[in-house]
Amino acid sequence: MPEAASAAAMRATIGDSEFDRDTAVTRRAPGVYDIDLSAGWTIINAVNGGYLLAVLGRALADALPHPDPFTISAHYLTASRPGPAVVRTETVRTGRTLSTGQASLFQYDDEGNEVERIRVLASYGDLDTLPDDVRTSAKPPGIPPMDQCFGPEDGPAPVEGSSAIADRLMLKLDPATLGWALGQPSGRGEMRAWFGLADGRDADPLSMLLAVDALPPTAFELGLKGWVPTVELTAHVRCRPAPGPLRVSITTRNLAGGFLEEDAEVWDSADRLVAQSRQLARVRLG
Image (tube, rainbow, N blue to C red; front, side):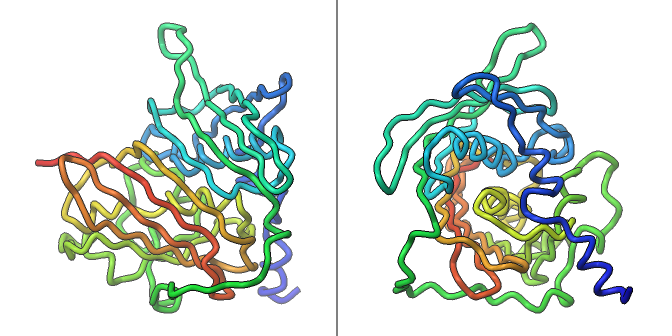
């Protein structure tokens, strides 16, 4: 079999991939779901916020009568850790085109107390029923071809266990937003990249919840270092993405009082704006 055909045959599919297995929830009772949060989606010891959003998004997709997240807002209350967790959902309202629900993820701390890690409020619908009419002034980000961009594999070897999530992503960063990696941050607060899952699985609405929070923080290009924990994240899914890699563009315009915003746009291979997000994140100054 030719190499290209062999690689295509080995590509994971939606519903049968590591991402699907690691975000799968098991219904224990109506509205209550169990999951074992995978260590494969961590940065150092913290579970990635986009992965957590996808976990709760999957639970709500099961609990609500509509299949797709249209808007989902999350408040990150405490840092999640790999291991057992429970998701509790509640249906707030159901209508003909939209249904709204809320969900919280809980874990136990070292003293055995149940701790809420993240709480979301979301509205779900059916992306396949949306009209095709598009009127926009938004334009796809100008990212160089993928073979002119750089991924984690192109840099120095990371500290073992420092970023397990990198092994599960296909991430190729625009060289214009890589000054921080060379000790020369641009100061512009921009990050752009080609994005996909490492096993070749195409994007869907749930994986786009991961995409909006998977790039290095824009704070790096502002000359800051260290963990940038998310306080709140709101994502909008605009349409079902076409097969192929996504392009993600993230910008920060304002850092004040130790907090910054990140505005993300996600574009598919058909040059459509398929998802957007804004998050508030905390940074360490000095």
